[in-house]
Image (cartoon, rainbow, N blue to C red; front, side, top):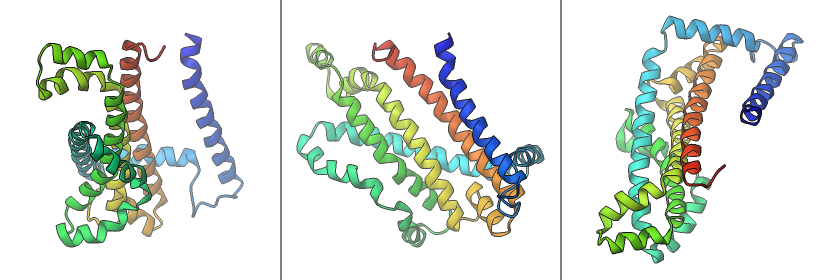
Length: 254
């Protein structure tokens, strides 16, 4: 039990130390209030902003875009990886693309997406999708590589077709790696959507963040940043626990 709680407590300790350092720096005016208010004030502003409901619509708007982008990344990524895994020459060709994908600034294509799709929700969704899909593909390919050969032999013995093999054998066996891809897809989708909204959207958390930044409204800007961080950490933690549970079931983690 002690070992189980050691890492979470260590994380909380590191977080508390970081918050304490910021609190001291703000109290000594090393960080002035024009730049950032003390962490305790950010917490109070966060509570006030959430209680007021002033950004509820922005939260729902961004959450909708993130869910769509992430769902697209998962569906396309899992399907595409399953196809590529069956064609080794194609995989060899695409391996270089996958390994260098995140060296390309996806946001650089945002002006082009605006020209093609306009100033609606599609550009942020597409950016979020492009940010997340390759992470899903790479993780899925890793999972498919680790599917035991005996399971593939079992599918042949049972005379399963490729669709049945994928749904009943390979996908369940690769589930932990699918979840790893899902974690990355969610994080990258959030980054892509919020960053896109920050640049040129007319609503959403990114837009609210941009408006607060341009108007030196720290009482609104920092609570929104905290909200995005807290949401990302919570979702990532839930998926991490689910992934760990699946790995323990397969004897891959103690």
